[in-house]
Length: 92
Ligand SMILES: [Zn+2]
Ligand SMILES: [Zn+2]
Image (cartoon, rainbow, N blue to C red; front, side, top):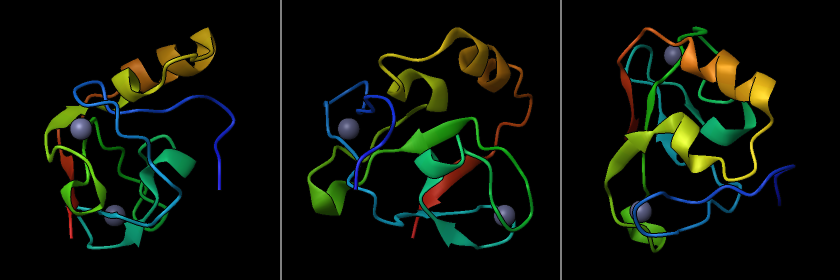
């Protein structure tokens, strides 16, 4: 599994591998947050922060979702930066 753009943790450089590691803090849905730029497919809440996944090699730190994208398209970045919700996507 790979993404259209390079994605890595801003703090430790861990790269997500396509696994469904994130749980929505609003509804509990589990999904791969990088497939939807942080939007929960179930309740449509957008998660501004994304946690790095410790048990598969990450650092467990939360970072702004937009900061994970390394070669981000400017329009996508603006879209993500419009986020006003501050709910984190939590590790399940
Ligand atoms: Zn949700
Ligand atoms: Zn990390």
